[in-house]
Structures are given as C-alpha cells and as structure tokens.
Length: 323
Image 1: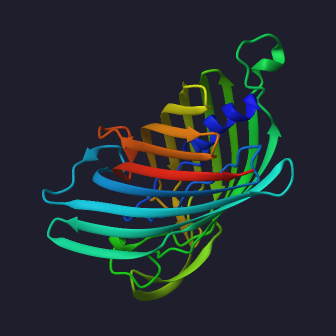
Image 2: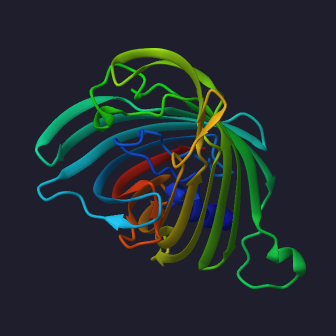
Image 3: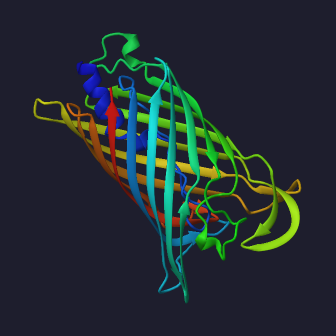
C-alpha cells in the first residue's frame, strides 16, 4: 500500500512532466497534447488540462532572437481532454484530444480562430518497475522504471493546407507522425528524477492547397523530430493521510530537421527550441485526485532556439484515477 501512495504522488501529481513534450502553437501548427502514462495500480485515468501559450518574439534560422513588433499580442488557448486505459498488467493505451483557440494581434493585423487540434494516440509497455527505495541497500534498489511505447499524431486540427487565411489560424500540423518513446524514472524518497526521450517521423503527403489557395500539387515530407526532457522532483508529504505536494524543475529540447518538397530538401525549414519549466502538483491519494500547475518558459536570448517562436506556456490540470 505504501508503495502505491508514493507512485501516485510521482505519476499522478506530475503526470504532465513524464509525457512527451510538445512545443507547438498557432504559428507553427499547435494543439497537439502530451501523451498520458497510467500509474501501475490504476485501471483507467481521466485527465483534463487548460493551456495558455503566449508568444513573445522568435529566433531566426541562425539562432538570433528578435522581439515581436510593438503592439503585438499572440496567444493560443488549449483545452486538452485525455483518457488512459490499462488492458493487461504491462500494457496500456491512451488518447488525448485538444480544442484550440487562437487570439492574435501582430503589428496592425488581428485574427481569431478555433477548432480541434491534432489528436495523440499512444500505446505503452511497462518494461521495468522502480522499487522506489528509501535507502540503497542492494544493487537492485538503483534500477529505474522503464516504460517504452509509441504514439501516433493524427491530423485532426486545421493546418496550413486547409482553408485558412494565415499561419495564425492553424491548430494542427496537417501530417501524421509516428513516434517511438521511452520514459525512465527513478525515485529515492523524497526525490525523483525522470528522463523522457522521443523520436518521430512524418509520412509524405500530397499538397494542393496552401492557406486557402489551390496550387500545383506537390509531395511534401516534414523532417524527423526528436525531443528530450529531464526533470527533478521533490515530494513533500502533508500530514499522515497520504496527501502530497510535489515540486518539479525541468529542461527540454526539441529539434525537427528540414522538410523536403518532391524529394528536394527545403533548407532552413527545420527548427529547434530549448525550454525550462517548473510545476507544482497536489495529490490526494485517498481520493485518487491530482491537481497541477506548470510553467514552460523560453529563454529569450540568442542560441536558445532556431527558426521558431519563443513562448511561455501556463497550464492548469486535474486528473482522476480509477482503481
């Protein structure tokens, strides 16, 4: 029972930090949510979160940061609804669907749009369990938990290849993407650390429209994407009832290679972005509830990104686990 309490604090209280990081917004195709990972002793979990992503400048292809024009106000809001289900001792699956609202003012132009974002479907296998030790007494106490899996990004959002006026109106990438993921976590009470790694590829697709205008068809393939996130958490136990408060700091890295058109590389279309983050989460293990708040921040200096906007993402989320 005590092991279950600690796992709930780690996984439910900070579920958003053990998921695949997504850095996407209205200008580059947003609305993709993180994948959900179900704690081992739960049969199902519902997770609902609300994001506000605020844009503040961008990096050019050489990594130089430039602020937006005076008077600009670029924001995307996302309501993410997720469900995870265990169907055997080691296997679980999840789905996450975002609803997206874009509210943008750039220089003298303004726009608003809304719609579904891209849906994420995930399948996970729990390869190794963490013994979650208080003290290191034997070598096996050092073994982490390892969860491996794959996720499929489904283009249910509005992309630049649909009937939109500008890049500020999109809510999705317009491409399928298949990712391979691995989550490694280790707890030595009251500290825990987690490493999330992901690598994905987009299938090629035909394009005959860009921002509402029909064009001569061509074949396009986005570049392969890699992402990683490292986090460190401290769990504070509230009284003797099993409630916990978890504080987490993280650093994340995202890179996407150049796209190609009809097999010819589209140079400078790829991007990279580094961010830092912090979160605080409350978990009531007696009632299976978890509540969290997080902040993901771009360092607005040269060298922290390339060919991508700088953003701050504020998230409030709640989850409930079914035993």
